[in-house]
Image (tube, rainbow, N blue to C red):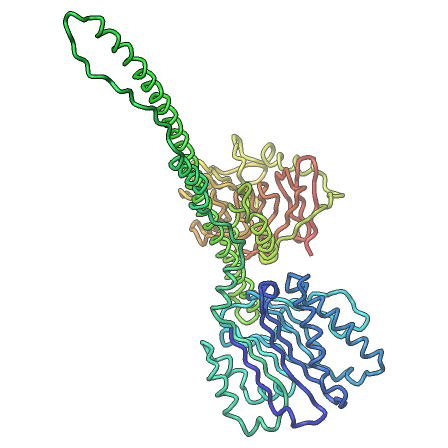
Length: 602
């Protein structure tokens, strides 16, 4: 990360003071909250307030790097509380000359996460990919608790990316840069080069003599990204082979050093056999056998004990070795999980960055949706692993993704759906059955059908045929004929006609046939991913397609180009079987077991 501070003509105006303050973390505790940057500008300043900005920045810095606070956002909030208390004390001391004249910006940056606030007419800009974004407008504002003196009242936050530039400019410098198109020239420095930045300002030295103010430039580089990856996941203690085997090695050393018990070897006399003196031979033999047997027994005891010790040591070695192998495998697996989670977090950050650019680049929203859906599929297995040390973090990331995905895919979660007050379920069922029993041709058995302009169309999803029954009036029908035949219709699930024929296929895609030919196929790229659509509906007067998915407890509305218009989902939709749409499309009735729910479409 590179930081440049440009101060233009500080002594040009006697009643104007301005300055910038940059603080980098100096120890492990300060690294938890990252870097802190401030820019201040005070007009119509009195001589006693020459150090007003220095004192204010010191108050904010001291509280921000307080060891009691850990999250950058919380630290910034507490710093602003302290700053407001400080300013309130100054005001109560009858010094209000700074009110209405103070412009001040505070930015905290850690691992590409930006939190900032400002008061007055300073400008904070994000330069990305030759685009210039006023992040005062683009980033979401979050209210914090009100203060007695509301100088600092809001915090803005957002995600940054590698090669982003943050510019903080006082009003006079901003107006100058805008009039000379310097901002566009700075945005074109890709990749960023500090010398080129200086060259842009040096090019108009004479004009710069007429302005006073500050331009703070923060360039995010790859170094910051590496730090982010290193700090995103907890580090695990490594298994030490030396540590594991030290007790065993010490024990073996003791055995080696321990003096061994040695039994004296018997002195066997040399025998001379004399034939006449047979008894003399017997007595020495008796004397020899006793010490020899004693030695043999002692050797056996020694050998047996030594063998037992060896066996125990081998068993201990195998247990430790097995534990070591298991621990290494566990560490390797955890490392893989850490890598996966880091990659997922990086994709989420990229998606957040794309959402910031959605007004500049129309395709950015679709790209963000695809990235988040891909990340969702990757993080889902991690959240299902029992006793995973990273599970809490994985669930937190998943919850963040879920919020983005539901918003991008226009999902509306209904906690308490309305029961339909005026829809007669029996009337709906009898009407449906009457098509089969009273008006349908003889021997009509299909349960996948629709009617259009008095004609009846049935789908045979075994043979892959759509059969047309032409009405001749008076409940009479001409001979049925095969209207369309295609292998793609095998196992299809639903049919509806609005002039063209819409088919809900077995793979949840939607095909439209016109004049007997396949015109187009829609594949819905939505979240949650489709599992088993059951029914489709539309009409000539409605611009939308309505799709029911009981497995996901939802009803989906798309336009006839395949773009998602709205999704309605509720835990109460736990037994969906069918639905009906009003003629104007503003009311939908969902048949859920014995209950009928009503959705009013705005």
